[in-house]
Every structure is written in structure tokens, then in C-alpha cells.
Image (cartoon, rainbow over all chains, first blue to last red; front, side, top):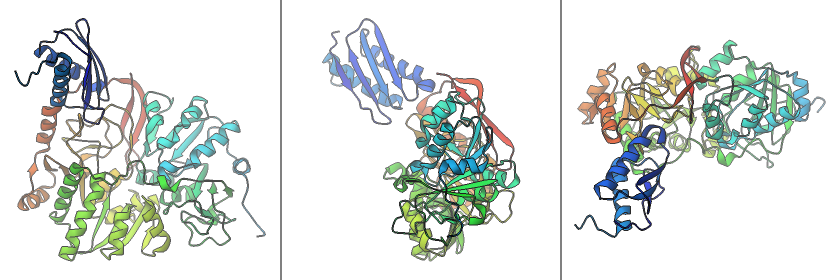
Length: 91
Length: 473
């Protein structure tokens, strides 16, 4: 699947900003205010969400401000839709 | 004036006999606007002092310059109620060789009075002072540059320190009365450009919330109070600095007017909210250890029924006459509460020091009803947890925990749970709240604590309650 640069989310408290760019394999670079306790979980949610959308090659930069998993999934999905042009909500 | 104690800061330090290894003290009535600590410690560094013990009533973001003085060996030990900002972050990572000793405000007062915390030289900022040392936190001339109101946390230092230096930005004609600190306790007076920026007194912990969740919590807390059995003519109350606990005052006021109930006194850090209720005749007396904003500071300057108390008179466990013993209701905030009702207000869930003990354990233990108000989660950080990161207020003094997911009552207070249930409030088991938080955020990984002790938490009776370890990045 072709990937363009795309972004979703904000830097507000409780949100996460997801920036997607073309890449080899799935690479997640995470900066988080709760990295020590939740970094592993956040990366897993991002990876699982992308794989669930059929994206296996992308470079992801995630800047997290304490978002919950539901928010992370929503932001990753929105960024993926923008990056691929494929509307997963419609299909 | 035939006698004067006015000297330069350097002369005052020389005259004090301060030596390496001694203890110096400060108050934090200017909170985020304080200029005294940085000014004095910079001068001590310039004069070549080493190994000093800095015993402040509290420290905040503005004291980041202490980091360099610690690295240079000027300050090697700290005692305080709280630490915030970059200084707290560095100390959490192991900056200081010796652990910081944390005490509550009442605990610090008791420790100074008993001699356990001996102060060699106190450097105390005042908004007005005469040449002999009669000092006040209130402005007394047109040249006044600052105002901090109550000097409650400075009073034990003034009374018990071996040597007292007043720093002021307004030297006024003798006699500067009414005074907070007596000239008889003061050795030197130093005139400086500024002791503090009064506009920053209400920075730090205090904010007036417009957050809808805080307002919901405030309304719930007010309902708890009104239905607790303690809301009756002549009751007394204290609020902490959290947004929700401050907002709760607004809803309590409405109920007081509606039911014709008056409070005998409000205690502790006094805010504009409390001053308003007092001026409306709803609260008889304000007992003020710390004026939390400019309105409170201006009130204490002009109102006879708004009285200053020392930290000892406010919250000492050793003094039966201290005001907390007469306190009915206290509303407090928390970083974390655990399933045993233990509270942490000092160390963040990332293991980094980011708060202050304040009067939390003092008021929780001695009040008739203590209410903790906190959201279930702050972002992804849980506030109701299986075990607090650091123990500050033991659960036996905590009666009710108010969250947006329900109200938990300490099993030791079944009568309160019954009253709240009868009023239709949602009373839940605290374990349910902790489980609810976990179900939303998942299981957090353990914090990367090292094996160096960076902080010791003293309880208000002078015993070690917990220790804080360094965080490894």
C-alpha cells in the first residue's frame, strides 16, 4: 500500500499526535509523558492498529500526552486513512 | 532613630556568625514569586560558604538556580514541605548526596519548636519592616512594593532560630504595627529591591477551575459535606489548593445561604473565595497561616477577624491548642489515593517529585471529616491506585474519596457512608474505583527506581513514614 506523509491528533493533554511517513517495516518512534509506565502498551496499540488496517511498511512518529488507548486507535486510524487515501470507515 | 539594625546583606551574614555546615531557613509566602531564597543563597555562594543545610517551609519552580549551588557544594542538604520544577526533577535523579527531608507544615512547626530542626540563621522576607525589625507581610506605605499577607510559616523560624535577618523591600518608620514578627526576635534588617512578586502568589498549585470535570467533582464534594452530618451551625472548614476543592466552596456557599447555616471559622491557606464568604457574614473568623492570593493578603491587612497564625498554632500535632484540633471539615486534593485510603501528594506517578505535603496529613488526621477530591484519571495517569507511589497521609485519617465515578467512604466511618447513601449519593467500594481505572488504562509497567534514597518523608509526629528513591532514565 502506498503511503504519503500524513498527520492526525494534537499536542493537547490527553491526546496523541501521529505522524506517518513512508518506511521499511513498521517503525514507531514514541515520545510520551507516560513512557516509563505505558510506553510498551502505547507502541503495541499503534502497531496493532496499523497492521489491522493492512499497513506493514511505515515510519510513525508519535507524540503522546497521556492519551487513552481508544484515542490512540482513533488518531492512528485517521492518520492511516490520510496516508493511504483509503477510507476505512466507508468500506 | 538612635539604634538601627539596618545593614547590607553581606554585613548581616557576617554578623550572624554563620559557618559552613549550618542551617539556614526561609519561608515560601511569595510562592512562585519568591526572590529571597535565590538572592541570599547567591550571596552565600559569593562569600564562599559550603555545606549549608537549607530548611525552607517550601520550594517551587522559581528555585531552579539552587541546582548550581548544590553542584558547587554551597547547599548539601535540604528540608522542605515540597519541591517542584527543574530542581525537583534533578533531585529525583539523584542531584543531592543527602536525601531531602520532607515535613508537613505542622510537622515542620513542631520540629522547629522541639529543637529537632534547629535553625542557625533565618532569612525572612517581609513586605514592610521598621529599622528595629518589626516585620509584616502587609504593605504600610505608599512605597510598598509587595504584599504576602500572613507570615505564618515564618513565625516558628523567627521565634526559634538563633539569629534572624529580615529582608524587606519597604523600610517604614518605627513602629511598624500591627507586626507579625517582633523586633525582639530580629537581629538584622536588610533592605532589598524586591522580596517577591506578589502577582505570582497564586501561581503553582492554585487555579480557579473552569474544567467541567473539576466542577462536577466540586458539586459532588459539596453534596458530601452538606449530607455528612457535620454541616451545621458553627461548623469549621478548610480547603486545599486543588481546582475542585476551591470550586466546592462556591456550592457550599449556596447551601449555607439556603439553609441559614454559618461557619465559625475557615482555616489554613485562605483564598479570595473564603474572604468573600467571611465578608458576606457566612464565616465568622478567618484563621490564616498563608494568604493564597492577593485578595486574602489585602483582607488580613485590614480585617481584625481575619487573623494570622503560626505553623505551630495552625497544625502542630504536639500542641493541643493548634487549630486543626478544632477543625470539622477539610477538603483536600491528591495525586494518588490507594485502596487503603493512603494519599500521595508529593511524588508524581512517574516517580518524580512534583508537589508539596503542605498541611495535608495535619488536617486529614485531626479534622472530624476529611474529604479527598480527585478525578479517577488524569490523562492516562490513574489517581485511584492499588498502592500509592509514596505515602504522605496515612489512610486512617482519610474519610471520604470523591471521584467522578463514585464516592468511596473509609470502612472505619460506616455512619458517614450511611448518611451519604440516604442522601442518594453514589457510594462505591474504593477497590471498584481502582479496578475501573485499571480497566481503562491497562496495567502500568513498574517505575524505573534506582537504589539511592533522594527523599525521606517524615510524619507529623517526627517519625520516618516513607522514603523516595531516585529515578533512572
